[in-house]
Length: 174
Image 1 (cartoon, rainbow, N blue to C red):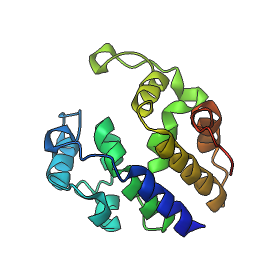
Image 2: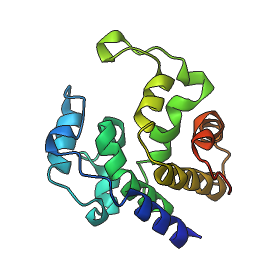
Image 3: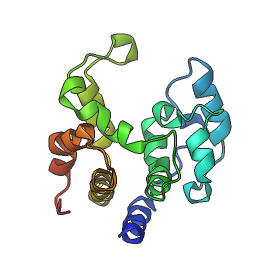
Image 4: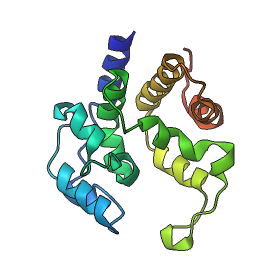
């Protein structure tokens, strides 16, 4: 099952282009975005990234997933999902960025105008709207795996699946 899921993820994201060194993050305030740019600068092949690097970057904070631009997140997402499936992540969890803004308690929270306005849910839907059907299917399969692989119930993933991801996935069979 895991090998099939990994192959599905690799195939779905194989044609996503590196966003460019100038597009790794949209946030240029503080140490973490600066460290992220330095760490991911010219990392143009996500398949060559070591899981420990992914989990700890930048600078041991393990917060890269929070600071990637939308394009960088889409490019590096398969590396994180695969490392998670292999049990190699301790700090980073790609399901958080995939799901946290799509749950009832968060999706209607307003974003300050200085950060672009709108709501968290609107922002997440805009970010994920450009993912193609194959990528959405791979994400849904990963999220099903995440739900089933955990010993703990995860209402965030389940709710995000119901609120958004399953509606986007035409073939949402488990």
